[in-house]
Length: 264
Image (tube, rainbow, N blue to C red; front, side, top):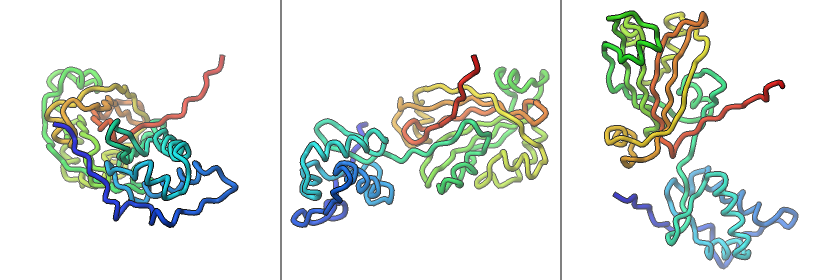
């Protein structure tokens, strides 16, 4: 089913009375000033995600500038990922994309709260299971061993952002069941409550399409792009401790990493 995007409420989002154009400074390029003003409106929430922006004609009247100047400003915002265009319909505000640094082993909740986002989790299930072969291989488990499987739906600013599936040794899982998994990262619980220092993670990342079940949990259409991460967490001593499968909405999250040039 096609997504219905809200029409603009000009009483709310109009920049100001077109008869009183906004005065711009002369020493800075006009398109750069318009970009800055519109960026501020988006980031402060005046223009909401998926809300239609004022038309080019409205912006021309509001700023008393040419169409090419308005298009330069909108082009800047589009390149920053703040807006998107739909041919024949107009320009809309993009969903905000939070990001996490892959160069640092840090819990999702901790990383997001440091950037000012609100985050929490909903525990979908916590149970003892016989691990799939892939989990056994990644964690180096003996034949017949069981693990604790933890499934959570993670929220960012009260909207679903990812489904996380974690596998840990049962002796840890039993203790984990008593922890506040809705508001705390597993990393924090392992290190602070269980005194298990973490060392590093091995991960693989790929893209996939959302299944019907995954789409329903994340609030996206079936077949939407999903960022899939497979991660193995090791203790400081190098022992594999936790295996994770993370499914992130492709339209609401991104990862960043700094890569140093290798010596030749």
